[in-house]
Length: 434
Image 1: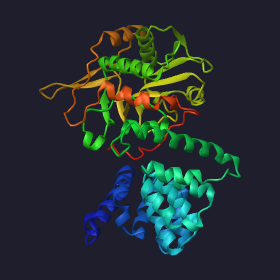
Image 2: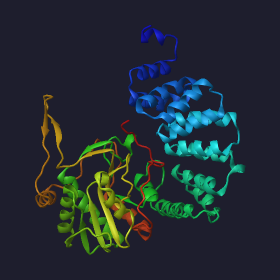
Image 3: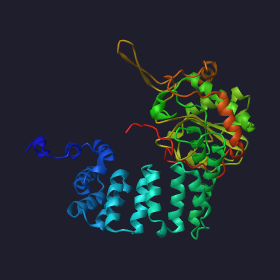
Image 4: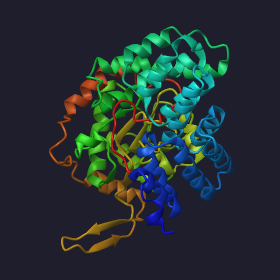
């Protein structure tokens, strides 16, 4: 029987899922299920997920999916399947299975917590709050009410988060103490940011500060309706690096936090930008030392940084300011910068290899610029720092708006505690590549 005949009479979404599974297109199947799993029967989806898991070598998920395919009404099988989906990043599929399990076993808090994990991991914070609120009488302080406060904050409800957090007792298990302290700092920053801006679903600068303690220097002037200040893909330039230094100086002055030195990191891009920053700010440049205080650590993009360097930056040193020019928001490094020029999913540095397209449609590959960092730094300082015009859709982001924001939150900046990044866009959504 041909594949086309086999799918006759099927729901279109389910038929498409079968086609992708039969073709062995695991990424395509999981992208498709992320959008359609909520409206497909869990018993029909499980064999397809099992097929994908088999191709990936995820034997635990293969077994769990087979059990659900055999009995889609078994809450234990649904829970195990949902748990395995969470472990392998299939959060949308996991949420469907875990909702089914909870319907069959009402009030089972193990299922509730795993469902909240799936929703939180999928950045569906409002739904996580709803699930926890529906089981409020059964919630333990740790982790349940903590999760309620945390997800309320990332859903944009500062007052609910503050109310829930203030009622949390000291945790019996000290392993929860860092989470408690981190949440308290996030709520304090959110309140400060609310005094400086709307803190709504379009206030990227405010929410980035609340979640990570970092200040975003520039907002993307393209596709604001879908990106709301973040980039999906961007090609950076020497001129925009120069503009970043201008705004970096504005932030440091507005906050009254002028460092004594600039610390250089070893990779080509970070070193070039660090040398440029040192000359621009008229500060001495020194090799990075994790213990050095009153210094500006300059990174171009920490996405490819070594674990050793990330570990050193994660442990915040008093008086040390971390400036990362290009910060990835979809796959964060694990270290949140104190200052980021822009948030991106993919960014091509000025010295990276790139493909240029001519008006006639021809393409040209430009090889990477391998010149010494000193020469790249000179080009940064010589380049035109004028802002990119954009598409006219984004609201203005004048220098005065940035410095006014910094002045209002400066008492909480740089942030305290470790530089832990947040793997969520929070209340400000942006489109992304699958």
